Length: 143
Ligand SMILES: [Zn+2]
Image 1 (cartoon, rainbow, N blue to C red):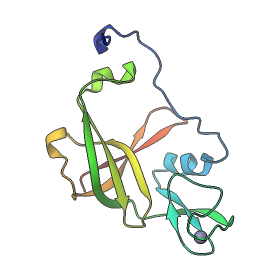
Image 2 (image 1 turned 135 degrees about the vertical axis):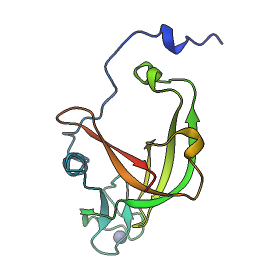
Image 3 (image 1 turned 90 degrees about the vertical axis):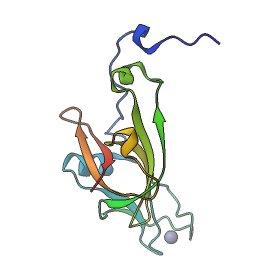
Image 4 (image 1 turned 45 degrees about the vertical axis):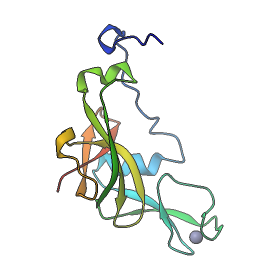
């Protein structure tokens, strides 16, 4: 297979989330304030990300967004050496990791870490990328 090189890819806008979509709007609103939130079941306390209509632990529909501690552990990570999205080509190489927060919610996001600085099991804390006036993306970095 002949993959196009990232440098030959055409420029296009960054692939940003729709921060007005009702299911995720509370998360993005909190992110603008650099506050980490996750969905918590109001009946059994199960805490998760992304949100679900039904609690997977007790099947309750009684769910709410709550602020959680912006800290956790790096469970796993990968280092991207090829930009699957051309708008990320200038960022190569970059790290994407799965972070298990102390509250239990799991986030799979870009890390503000150099590849050689990422270690499975390391402590991480939320960091924030203010991309536009409307969109702030969650990342994690070393504490
Ligand atoms: Zn529940």
